[in-house]
Image (tube, rainbow, N blue to C red; front, side, top):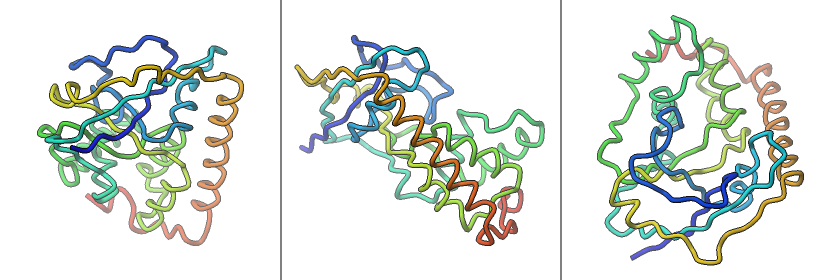
Length: 215
């Protein structure tokens, strides 16, 4: 039996993880999202521009008998394909047509997994995604670009069994100061985008092995 500590950053003091709930348009679809990084959870708790303090809930996940899909162990294109299933990087007809082909070629069937682990697609990611689907980013620099984004790793609780294995830690609730961690959240995003733009505009970006050529 292996229990891991995870954190859920939110604007809500009361949270009840419930199987079947969640937004379809989140990174990995419906589910309950957590991270093993406390500081990131604090930033995510105040990511809404509402000037209100947030909360971090602490959990223990018993991973025994759980089937976990870890996108860090997969090709980055598989992760992008998973995001394309749930989130739109562009509203153009070209993207709608090509993304379907991309998913068919690189997508992974996630139905049999209890938990999905992988990067979190924050605002910085969408800057990359939009440039990628416009054929402005070479595949050779894609992984480096994502590392510059400081995306952080998240866990998505998917199955009924996984919800049963998740327990909130009593007395583990933390209050998050809005001003302190909203500033950190914004600084991370601004810094990431600047570094990304510099890499995209550099000679390292050959713009030959691009989105449309991967299909």
